Structure formats: structure tokens, C-alpha cells
Image: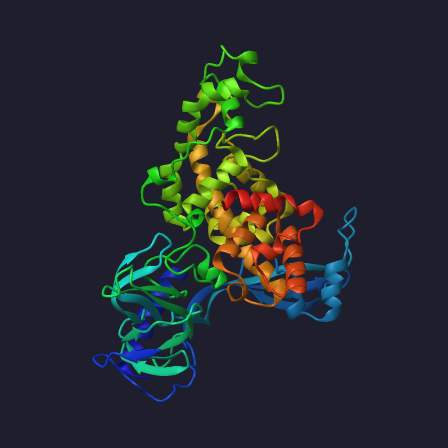
Length: 538
């Protein structure tokens, strides 16, 4: 082992012990090479010695007081059933497993006895962090509202090797792009050329002085040109789909689906404006008008029946009386929606359209239904958010359950804890408050905007899996970015069951997967989802 390697291992071992106890290469930085062999991958397992307490137990029979098994464990408390299975014979294991408790002081079978405990040492294998490669762009200063990069000069893709171990460094980066191989120093500069709508595939990895490589990473790169009406002033649109991308955040869910947004940006209902005023709306919502009248915000005493209809909405006079307050109310969340959109990637206009369709921006219980909040969350929706959005689960669960329980993951929680977590999440978005002004806790309503954004991200993950399960294809290979968001809204509104049936029927019948085709293949119970999606995506 070299002195450098030994120094690296000692530094990492010390830290761990503390924890435990078409393509052109720019010639200035790289050169063409023969097609590289695939990378062997990370190989960073280091043995370290740790202290532990060894507990020696005997298993003996009650009738003869005879020791039939001796075993050593490294934890307090009696050996587990699995440890007895691994260390003792068949008869002892099953006898211990099946024996009944002592009755009136009469015991049969076996008993456990702690014989000894002492400090000991053992070696364990520790995996050190691997090398990595990060991606960014050069010559690209602007972005569209969807995150697509706008470059005023020919774009250059930067691959930068990252070595986390001290005293080690990246030796070179290798890979292939659109079938052509390349190799370069610790930083690659790849000049990009226009591609078709599907882009080109990039495989890449880094070699380290440690003697191993990073994992093999992949990316899909799309480059399109646009003259913006002036052929003498060309620009380039660049999208990069990869886990290693460190530039402007990708369009929401594009990496999940491996799907590029439309060149130049998605349709208006999937954009996030910079200024909240661009989200402003002035729709005379009937249900919202009625709630503002009921809460005394609007004085409709001069209207017939106080401005209200028997079925719960506002009559024409009530709507006219409430018009100014309805406009103000439906726009009060706009700045927050944009902030949440920038944090999560969920398009701001989509969020606002969804809130309009679900609750008309009244953040309590809608018409005495079990659905709650601006986006009308149900227990099934909460289940989707907690199961399909692990990062959200990891942040939310400790607010309700112990950190130890949450560490098991949502799917491994006890049924009663899953129920408690779902109910807590639904309750967290219900801003109804009897003792609050207007009967609404606006701080609770504001908190709920983020919850609904994370629930949509969970639905986009689930949608991708549903499509893969029913077609055997990657979502982005058979459906457009816009249609994939429409399918996600089906999942959010009607559930994965309705979406799965529609995907399966559409794919098998039409041999394609578009929203227009799917709209004709919903089962009767799922048909309302069609109008739901069409309303939100107007």
C-alpha cells in the first residue's frame, strides 16, 4: 500500500471510529481516445477494529440442568430468536420457540443464563464514499420559465470529477456520447451540437488515484437552436436529464419520467412566473362567495336570502356583493405558491389551477366532505404522499411519531402508525378553525401549500411506475411531458387504480399513450377524472 493510500485510510478510519464509539472535445483540456472499457466501479472497503461488549449466554434444560447451547451476542438483553437459530441445533431452536411459560412454579423446556460479559474487539468492513462526476454548462446564462437553459453562444457541457477522499484526486474522466467515446482530464469540456427531440445519451465515469472508478452515470442531453426571429442572432436551448446535473433545476418530474419538456418551455398551465402578479385571477367563484358571506367578510344583507342559495352557494346578488373580496381572496396565496414552486419544482400555475378546481381557494373542508384543504387531501392522497415521496416522509414523520419509528420507513410502520400519520397529514392541511378570525387559520393554509406540492411530486413518481408496470416502457419514451402531467393529475384525483386501468386499455388498444387517446378509455367510475384534468390544464 502506498503512503498516500495509507494516509487516506487512516484519516477515514479515524473519522469512522469517532462516529461509531454529435460531439467535439475542446483540445485544451481533453483528447480523443479509443472506446473505453466499462468502469469497474467503486472499490472502497476498509477494515477497521472496534471495541464491543461480548455477552456469553448458555441455554440449559430445566429437567437435567444440562447446557445444550452456548452463544455470544453483542447487545444487551437476551439473544434473539434468530441468533438462537444460527448458533444452536434444530431441537433447541424449536423447543425454545414453542415452549410454554412456567405454570405454578413448574417449568419445562429450556432456560437462558448469562455466563459472562467482557470487552472484546472485532474487525468490520466500512465502505468509503466513492468518486463522483458533476455536470454543468458553460456559455449559458439564462433559463426559460421551465428551467431550460438558454445559451447565446455554442454551449459547452462541463463534466467535473469529484474525489471526496483526502490525499486522492481524479485522474481522468471517460465515457461515450451518442456512441462516440471520449476521455479527458479531471474536468471535461464537451462542445454540444444540435440533437433531435429525443436528445443523445451520455454515459460517463471518473477514474481516481485511489485505483477505482466512480459509478457509471448516465444523462440525456437535448440541444435545439432558435433564431428568435433573427437568423443572425441564434441561441441554443439545452436540457440535461441526469442525477449528476448541478445547473439550473430541471423541469419538474422530467428526471423521474426521463422526459424533456417542450423546446422553449411547457404550456402556460405548467409554468412558474417570476412575479406573483402573473398568477393573478378574477374568477367569480360561487362557493368561495358563499363562504365569505357566511363568515361575515361580505355584507349581503341587502340580497334575497342573504345572498345565499339553499344548496349552499351564493345567488347572483350574493356573488356581485362578494366580487371584490373574492378577487382578493383567490390571489392572496400567489406569492406563497411561487415560493413553494421554486422550492419543489412543481409548476406554480398548476398548483393554482388545482386549488381553484378542488376548493375554490377555501382552505377548510369543502361541502362537508372528508377531503380537506386547498387541494382537498384525502387519506388515500396522504398515503401516496408518504409512500411515494420518501424525502417528504422523512421530514414529516418525526413531527408525529418518534424518530426511531420513522427510521423504519413508511411501508414498515405498524398499521396503526400508518393510519395515525395519514390522519395527521390530512389534519395538517385543514385550516378550519372555530376560534380563528373568519373561521380559518391562514397560517395552516399557508403550510398546506407545500404539502400539496409534495403530494403532486409523489403522484408523478407513482405515475411513472404505473406506466412502466403497464407498458414495460420508460414514461418519457412513449408519452409527452405535458401528457405525463395530465396522467399525474388522474393519479392525484382518481388514484393509481383508475390511472392503471386507463393506461393499460389505451396502450393495448391504441398502441400509443397520449391524453387524447386515454380520454376515451376511462371506466365509468373513473370518467370524472377526464373533466378534472381538462379543467386544470386549460
